[in-house]
Length: 391
Image (cartoon, rainbow, N blue to C red):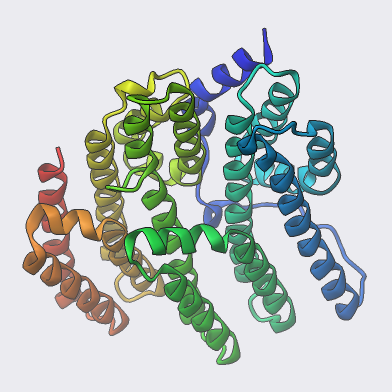
């Protein structure tokens, strides 16, 4: 089997491969290795490690960027950088999240080297799949913070690592802010600030809420990059397909690779919508057949269904911290598709929906079950209407 065919087959089978994945928060029973380093030594080692990840990633991208200029790419250099400084991190996330990113990255690099795959496509696959690794590494560090709670030094160490991983992918958030006029960088900074304050005040709920703001805002970033109108890669690839098939394939590859960061979460709650989006972005699909409006509606239905599930979970947990956390998650997923919801139900109704979502979070914090049940039922009903309107 050729490397190109191997990669395309791998992409086509992605839904099956990723289907068994779960949230980082649900990953348990990870083996621990006793570390006898002193705290100062551990911090210095961690800082060097994060710097190596960032520097190696940037150096690899700089080499791969030569493909955009029609220059020769030294794939041996990129492969060595990957194997020496990035592959172990990728394998760790593969093991934790039941993923196959290392296989996809190494296969893509090999296909670029032997010329069986367009070098710019390889560049985009490497870039966006590595961004998924950095994103899931943030989720990993957040999970570790829960396990280390009560050990302030360890919790702060995990937080600093998460901040370092975020710094690597921050430019992706900035690009989407520029394209859509959003304020996601500020939202993420606010989330980190809430975590910092929560640690200082020994307030685990505040820490968990801050984590959700960061996680869901990053998910929004990946959605805006892929399926949102008018600047997602579904729209870009479909438009380019009418002019330049090769460039359209590059745009399609970017959309597919970005989509991997949210595939698992979406698939768990909205399998049909996820399968449709995956097929549209899959490199076996002719870019001329991509339907940006249908992709967008599938995303809207999918995220609305996630919000519904979060609210159902919150309803069962009113009176506990979990009820507040999942209530906030519901509100954050509404925000992910906020502009789409406005287009479906109008600005006034959307404003009312977001106000009700915020009111419910406060009700959940107050542990008022009677009021909370009534409020969450209204939110679920509104979201079901949105799902229907997005068909």
